[in-house]
Image 1: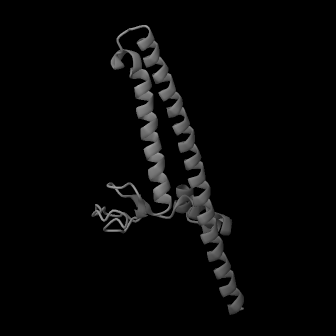
Image 2: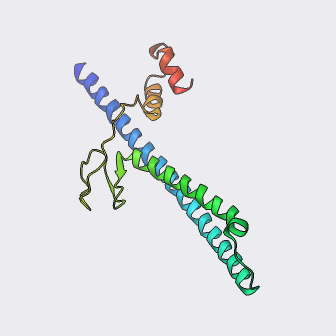
Length: 158
């Protein structure tokens, strides 16, 4: 019996690890797809801005960024910020960070960038509670409500 209990525990652990990794990959793929969409929209805005500038040039009119391009510039700023936020989420999923000097993706715990050698800022890490995926996996493994505390059910959203 002990053998089968250990085998069951190992299988459960393997399932949790696999589910977590698969979930992270799926989430990263969605984030990168969203980033790609935003970059495409920014390119469209750049094209629109270029047309406005060229039309003003042809008509020998003065170009005013405040007047003629403010709306497009604001949209580009907003989308750029959203892309940056999505990139940070992708890095968090992989336990990575971006070097502020060369912008290479490096491990979070690196004190120096292996690419450019610049010293990295040290951030205080807060230990996060279980990820939502781990919580969901726990519910899937223990579907019997008696085995799950009320607090865990609230954390999962049940």
